[in-house]
Image 1 (cartoon, rainbow over the protein chains, first blue to last red):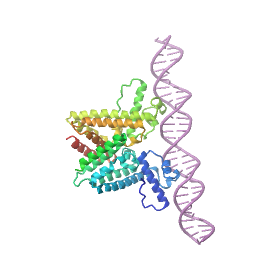
Image 2: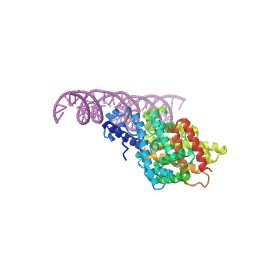
Image 3: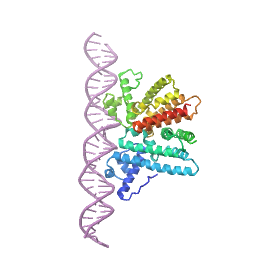
Image 4: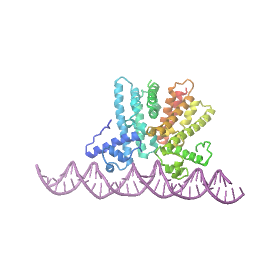
Length: 195
Length: 195
DNA sequence: TGTACATCAGTGAACGCGCGTTCACTGATGTAC
DNA sequence: TGTACATCAGTGAACGCGCGTTCACTGATGTAC
């Protein structure tokens, strides 16, 4: 799944966008410290020397890549939720079913950046951490909009905590157990908050 | 808080234990890739060359440090739960109150290893991942024993997912917001599962 | 009890390697006339 | 339309540094007689 190319026009903007797209996937696959700049550039089809024409530092890339990953998966999530709602699901059930879909177990590379990196966030510099924080808040806001009208305000936070924790822990288990976890989490969440 | 020294007798065993104790805190503070061997050894009051007399590789240290961190915090958790129960709390309320105590926001160094490292686990080698997996299972087992008799089997998994997710996300927020998250999580969990 | 020697735990220099960052350069693209 | 030049994006060698790992050595501890 390639990232959404925003309205880039010049060659340089397209390259910048390509580096960002690669980095947004790399940080989710390998963590903030998992891959060096040289390999990120190589995966974008470039040599490492050109990096600093696009970003002032590695850290600046991490900030932008965090934002990018969040926006990309937010868009995908909304689209799939729409499809599920078109089949008759309530907004919250559509959200939970999409967010905790079995295919999210592998391919963390294309999944939610919060799940992929949450435990690393407190160790990052302020700018990276606050970019990640913004993605957490966006996720809470999305859940809040999806809950039935009149739901208690704290429910959105709890649903997010449960979804993030469940997917993270499911990924630490063998595939079969992980799927059972996710199924349990989907059913529990829908029963608790969508009744 | 120092780790529990098991029945070490010889000088070498004591040193081995000291390295492990330092490493178990370092991985929670800085992540699996956050600090090099030289600094771990220095924090244990040694020079880096001596490391390989105690462990066959860095990876082997990560495995043992994961186990050690889990056992240490498991013991602390049980002790504090006991104190809370002595004041009249139910086992589950004691667990939630202890696990999601405000003082867990800082000092991840002395907190639950699952919370500190969950999103890094799928990127580790098999032996490290399976040590971490064992700590997840131990946490689920502890929650299961603490739930009221007759609780549905899936509840322990969900409570763990919620506790881990809530503490992780609370740590990404500014301290004040983090405390509010934790308070909300404690109240919600107790209301949901301890009624 | 005292001396001689073996064992052991820890030291510190060295290795090859990959990292983030810098920079002089190249070759392609675009503009001026 | 064609030539001359300026701009620009990307190249690749080089830097200093910290990493995991190895190893010859030292000095302290323990054992034998």
